Image 1 (cartoon, rainbow, N blue to C red):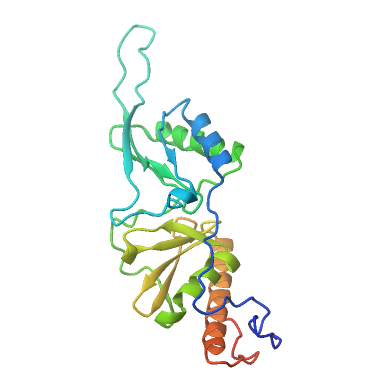
Image 2 (cartoon, rainbow, N blue to C red):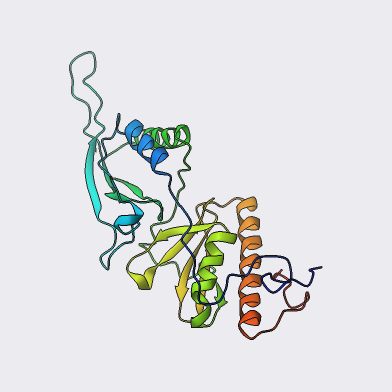
Length: 253
């Protein structure tokens, strides 16, 4: 069971951010590592990405979002021994043209006239270069196609407590900004990619990453959801000048 916390802790010991103080955002990218990744990956697929310092706005997106750059990568194999030309193959690359410490960076591959093994080769190239640079490359859904049967959990939080809940989500549950614009579509992702959190009229939505279908990922997502619910409940009690009892702060099963 949980224990009774101090005034700045929940009943299970998780720190409760002061109400109305969102705090500084959690760092999503390390500049040195990211620039090393771009340098290494560009040997195969040249990318041009500008880094934005916090003094220049910390990478916060404007109402139109982070600019997206596009590039076409020719994957056509060289002629065979007889000189015959191979089938033309291309991959379309879309990526954020700006990066910052505050937000996850995105790269998207699209293909129509290309063999699967060529696409897999590019994905492995990017994954290896990211790992060598000390970064984690994660697969996330584009959400272009509606999925009405995807389970979504809702964490109800009053409007005035949402800044503190966002601070707790980032600093104590391990989430970083995944998409910061438009504001209505702001979304956060866990640093291991197991779940996403978005804004909702009732508070927040919690969505597991369907592209990580392992049981371990689902269990970890559920555990994090329980932790976030407990922190949000503690925030509400704290705003009322009360402390939750251990039973009331028990994470949802």
